[in-house]
Image: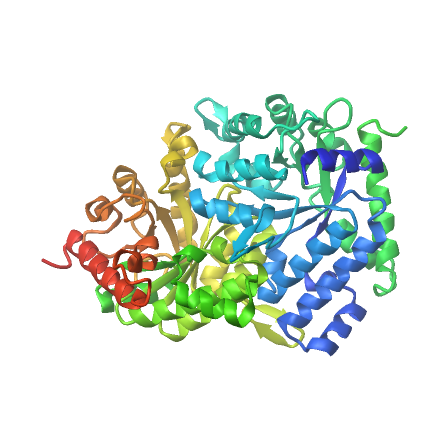
Length: 308
Length: 308
């Protein structure tokens, strides 16, 4: 679905946040893990089943208040092909519940290989007479180090298929400046990447005023957010780094436009591990996650002036 | 397995090349596809089965002459989770036949997420009381845009687990210069990345004189190969772009050290699609692929002075 749909869902729920579905096994309450191991043994199938059931429980508990989820592919790949099956089932379940699904894969390659990634996550594959969607997501994060040959195939998919992608511009980690903040012909590399995102994004504009091509801009760098926002007034920002990585609601204000649109803030651990703070062994993981989603919604919405 | 093992296999077979296992459905001979669709229908399972059987047939035909294979993850992800199962089975089959397996995934993320990728492809995962290897590869390609936080988790895995990784330094595609060749504080970005690879690589040196941390350097850019080689005398280079992308054997000489070690050249389409040039509808795909592997071996070996 188009970035216009994400925008609509955010406005309807008055909630510019996305829940990361990045479960490590140690984030999953023991009663779920035990049941899955009981059914499938201490195998990757068992671990992947626990992850899927945890994801479904989380989606059920916050689907009326949260507009989007962002499964991080690394944690599914970490459970092998059964993990990738759990990813597929998670995507289908989330979309079935009306959530916008952004696959966080930071994919990158060139030409027909970049096309293969675009087919996998945002498109379809012809198998004999049939067309199949391998992983039917709405959006995907991508890395632009390879330039136009790497990003172009994604942009064409966004335009033709009304999906979104988010290019890594300025990442939230402490060492992101190692390359990204050094001067490339007089401007920081992340600004040079943002300039290219602006140009590529023109090829997949939507009626709602935003491009299908967005940008990843870390919550931990408010000054860089401001610089990227100036270069990319029409890009939706995906903002990681809130919560566990140390950024607060006021650190993310520069990512938003004055009307409070234009960005979506991610939290993963804060939501997934909320149950660890209640002292109830995870029996209440849904209540705890929902409470954290509400707290985060109100925190961000206040910071951008949507609430008093 | 360590980069030292790859070096040994290359020397034993006198063949510094790697066969890309990047099958699109249209590269697979019809008799294989038909049989797989017959068994599994026109489904992702059927397509993945065809890919796996094609891969096994290829491995069988060149395993005594080729030291390594490089499956490109995008083409497996393109077939959904059944494709990832075919990837897993391909990796196991190739290693069982004594081949070194480099997963071409260009993965990148930070901290514990980068660790999750390292676990998935180069390490192991604890599930209850057991340790499982999700995708038991020997090497993985990675992207360094996120800096030390992104690369460090891989480097620690290489050191502890004796595996290899190859950082994208200068890619083979036409637009790779868009960012990579622009000057970052006076030097091309790809040289700045190479400088970092040299520093990170010191943390995972092997007894054979090479680091477990190698570099991806495109065959299509001989001058850049020379510059990167000067900065990275102890890194093994993975060299894409030979053949279908237009580079010839003489274009790759600068990637090698004077003794002809230090690099491995990839070919994918040339090998996978060799049968398309014989006019026999793919019945002879193994003979055609083997002949192309031998031709390529001799072509590269001559160019680097291993053969008269």
